[in-house]
Structure formats: structure tokens, C-alpha cells
Length: 84
Image 1 (tube, helix red, strand yellow):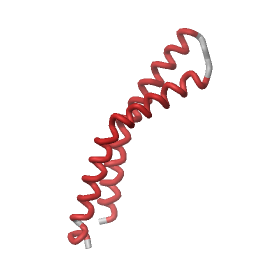
Image 2 (cartoon, one colour; image 1 turned 90 degrees about the vertical axis):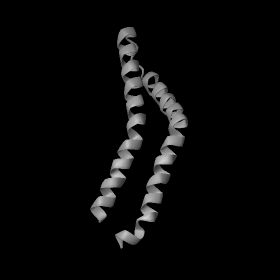
Image 3 (spheres, one colour; image 1 turned 90 degrees about the horizontal axis):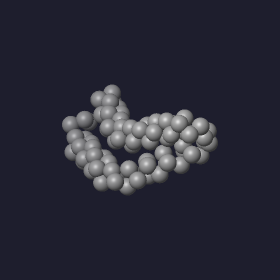
Image 4 (cartoon, helix red, strand yellow; image 1 turned 180 degrees about the horizontal axis):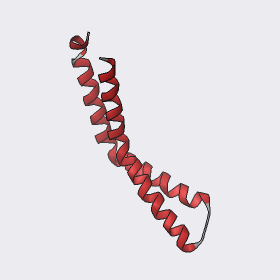
């Protein structure tokens, strides 16, 4: 029972984090290519756009993330009698 709950929670965490991580990866790769082309090797130049892109994506994806988390929480509460 504990294994299945842990598996479902990890699966939900991966599903929620995948869009944010992929956006950070794409922006980081783009900034790395831009830095290579311009030969400007400044750490903050790659850090700030990634943070801004992830914050914007969190604002856009927050309703979907909260919906998934609420659905999972409701699923857990509904299935408490079956799991005991």
C-alpha cells in the first residue's frame, strides 16, 4: 500500500515538474548557444532568463498544476477507507 502511494506521488511530481524543467532546459540551451556565438561568458546572463522563463511558465501553468494536485488529493481522501 505504501509503495503504491509513493509511486503515485512520485509520478505526479514528475508530471508536474516536466514542463517547467523542459522550459528551463530550452531557455538554458538557447542562452548557451547565444553566449557561444557572442563569446560573452557571464553567469548571470544565462541565469536570469531561465528564472524569468520559469516564473512566467509557473504563472501560466499554475491552474493546471493545482488541478492535478487537487485531483490527486481528492483521490487520496476518497480511497482512505479502501486503503485501511
